[in-house]
Amino acid sequence: HMFSRLFTHQSNRSAPDITPEAAGLKVFETKKSALEAVRRDWQAIQYVCAKLRDDEDIVFEAARQHHEAFNYASERLQSDRDFVLRVLQHQGLALAYTPQELRGDRMVVCEA
Image (cartoon, rainbow, N blue to C red; front, side, top):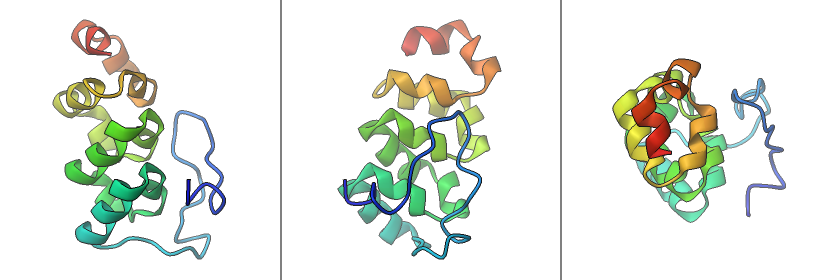
Protein backbone atom coordinates (compact mmCIF):
# COMPACT_ATOMS: atom_id res chain seq x y z
CA HIS A 1 0.00 0.00 0.00
CA MET A 2 1.14 3.50 -0.75
CA PHE A 3 1.14 4.67 2.88
CA SER A 4 2.71 1.63 4.52
CA ARG A 5 6.27 2.85 4.02
CA LEU A 6 5.55 6.31 5.43
CA PHE A 7 3.97 5.42 8.73
CA THR A 8 4.46 2.21 10.68
CA HIS A 9 1.17 0.92 12.04
CA GLN A 10 1.23 -0.18 15.64
CA SER A 11 -1.05 -3.14 16.12
CA ASN A 12 -2.40 -2.37 19.54
CA ARG A 13 -5.92 -1.48 20.57
CA SER A 14 -5.41 2.26 20.60
CA ALA A 15 -4.25 4.65 17.94
CA PRO A 16 -0.52 5.33 17.86
CA ASP A 17 0.76 7.91 20.34
CA ILE A 18 2.39 9.98 17.63
CA THR A 19 0.07 11.88 15.35
CA PRO A 20 0.83 12.56 11.69
CA GLU A 21 0.88 16.27 12.52
CA ALA A 22 3.51 15.73 15.22
CA ALA A 23 5.61 13.68 12.82
CA GLY A 24 5.51 16.54 10.30
CA LEU A 25 3.57 14.51 7.73
CA LYS A 26 0.90 15.76 5.33
CA VAL A 27 -2.51 15.57 6.91
CA PHE A 28 -5.86 15.47 5.14
CA GLU A 29 -7.86 18.33 6.64
CA THR A 30 -10.93 18.51 4.39
CA LYS A 31 -13.65 15.91 4.13
CA LYS A 32 -13.30 15.78 0.35
CA SER A 33 -9.54 15.14 0.38
CA ALA A 34 -9.83 12.63 3.23
CA LEU A 35 -12.60 10.66 1.50
CA GLU A 36 -10.68 10.58 -1.77
CA ALA A 37 -7.58 9.35 0.03
CA VAL A 38 -9.28 6.57 2.02
CA ARG A 39 -11.17 5.43 -1.08
CA ARG A 40 -7.79 4.89 -2.77
CA ASP A 41 -6.16 3.25 0.24
CA TRP A 42 -7.67 2.57 3.66
CA GLN A 43 -4.30 3.27 5.29
CA ALA A 44 -4.74 6.95 4.47
CA ILE A 45 -6.94 7.13 7.59
CA GLN A 46 -3.65 7.45 9.47
CA TYR A 47 -3.17 10.84 7.83
CA VAL A 48 -6.66 12.21 8.42
CA CYS A 49 -6.84 15.03 10.97
CA ALA A 50 -8.34 14.18 14.35
CA LYS A 51 -11.53 16.14 13.68
CA LEU A 52 -12.28 14.09 10.56
CA ARG A 53 -11.54 10.79 12.31
CA ASP A 54 -14.86 11.55 13.97
CA ASP A 55 -16.65 11.70 10.60
CA GLU A 56 -18.80 8.62 9.97
CA ASP A 57 -18.43 8.69 6.19
CA ILE A 58 -14.64 8.82 6.26
CA VAL A 59 -14.18 6.22 8.97
CA PHE A 60 -16.75 3.88 7.43
CA GLU A 61 -15.12 4.09 4.00
CA ALA A 62 -11.75 3.10 5.47
CA ALA A 63 -13.10 0.51 7.93
CA ARG A 64 -15.22 -1.32 5.35
CA GLN A 65 -11.97 -1.96 3.43
CA HIS A 66 -9.90 -3.19 6.37
CA HIS A 67 -10.68 -3.79 10.04
CA GLU A 68 -7.50 -2.10 11.29
CA ALA A 69 -8.77 1.24 9.98
CA PHE A 70 -11.26 1.27 12.85
CA ASN A 71 -8.29 1.65 15.19
CA TYR A 72 -8.00 5.25 13.95
CA ALA A 73 -11.64 6.18 14.51
CA SER A 74 -12.47 8.67 17.23
CA GLU A 75 -13.40 7.29 20.64
CA ARG A 76 -16.94 8.55 20.03
CA LEU A 77 -17.30 6.45 16.85
CA GLN A 78 -15.64 3.42 18.42
CA SER A 79 -18.23 3.65 21.21
CA ASP A 80 -21.27 4.39 19.02
CA ARG A 81 -23.19 1.11 19.08
CA ASP A 82 -25.16 1.78 15.88
CA PHE A 83 -22.05 2.83 13.97
CA VAL A 84 -20.09 -0.15 15.30
CA LEU A 85 -22.86 -2.50 14.15
CA ARG A 86 -22.73 -0.94 10.68
CA VAL A 87 -18.95 -1.39 10.48
CA LEU A 88 -19.13 -4.96 11.77
CA GLN A 89 -21.48 -5.90 8.93
CA HIS A 90 -18.48 -5.37 6.62
CA GLN A 91 -15.50 -6.03 8.88
CA GLY A 92 -16.18 -8.29 11.83
CA LEU A 93 -12.58 -8.11 13.02
CA ALA A 94 -13.09 -4.39 13.78
CA LEU A 95 -14.61 -5.67 17.03
CA ALA A 96 -11.06 -5.72 18.41
CA TYR A 97 -11.01 -1.90 18.32
CA THR A 98 -14.26 -1.35 20.19
CA PRO A 99 -14.55 -0.64 23.92
CA GLN A 100 -14.89 -3.57 26.30
CA GLU A 101 -18.53 -2.75 27.07
CA LEU A 102 -19.46 -3.19 23.39
CA ARG A 103 -17.47 -6.41 23.16
CA GLY A 104 -19.72 -7.69 25.93
CA ASP A 105 -22.89 -6.75 24.02
CA ARG A 106 -24.43 -9.92 22.59
CA MET A 107 -25.86 -8.21 19.49
CA VAL A 108 -22.53 -6.58 18.69
CA VAL A 109 -20.63 -9.84 19.10
CA CYS A 110 -23.15 -11.73 16.96
CA GLU A 111 -22.79 -9.14 14.19
CA ALA A 112 -19.04 -9.60 14.21
